[in-house]
Amino acid sequence: MTQIKGIFAASLSILDENLALDVKNTIKHAESIIDNGCHGVVFFGSTGQSQLISLSEKIQLINNLPNSKYKDKFIIGTGLNSLFDTINLMKIAKTLDFDKFLIMPPAYYKYGDEEVINFYSKIINEIGQTNIILYNFEKLSGYKFSVECVEKLAEKFPKHIIGVKDSSYNLFENLKIKNFSIMPGSETKLLKGLQLGCSGIITATTNVTSALAREVYDNFYIKSSQDLNEKLCNVRETFEKYNLISGLHSYMSEKNIIYKNILPPLKLLSETDKKELFLNLNKLDFNTKNFKAA
Image (cartoon, rainbow, N blue to C red; front, side):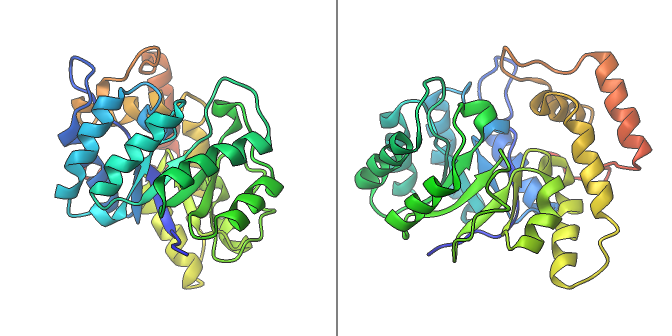
């Protein structure tokens, strides 16, 4: 079974003045995160405005990914409300040798474990060999994976379902599946997760905390001091006071104007909130002056 391990970011999507996906700079941003410490990135996760960006734009970006020097470090978020759009996007990615996918169950309608197992079964039966990371985020999808559901899926598809991103935080302390990547969705769960046997994290704020998160991760394995973990958690909690997409784009747009565009109904922070964000980050002595923005 393929496993993923380390610090991963749910990468930001960069938009042009017409709010169209800027493919070149979106890929460049993802590469910069890896340069700054991440082991890899996810395109079109929640932080990448996945539910707001058109299918045709996603296909356009995927078609350009093979040109990246970090193509082996990319995971593609393909969890769409349409089963057939999800399958078609995966098929396109597979023709380009991308085989790792983060898939959230469809949002809006209410359903239970049986329906979710059926959903992933249909994808796998259609796609064949693939590597799927389940995405547990009840706040956005309306569904929370149970431990039992994940165990059933991992048992039914041991060569296809390789892990879970846990942004509802009911799984990472309780799942015990061999050779299965368990990735909490927050830096505040990184150290505890590693102590419990988790594989790392996939988070929004590693768009800016990549170097700090990587140091905490590396220090765990070399059994070094974890003095930086408190700072890492505090930075995450500071961003969490706001909509994460709004906060991250507002923060990054101070470094490069290309980050200032996001899709409605999302918007940048108000000037008051932005000043508060920067003030609180400065109190933590957090800055990314050495961060290579796109």
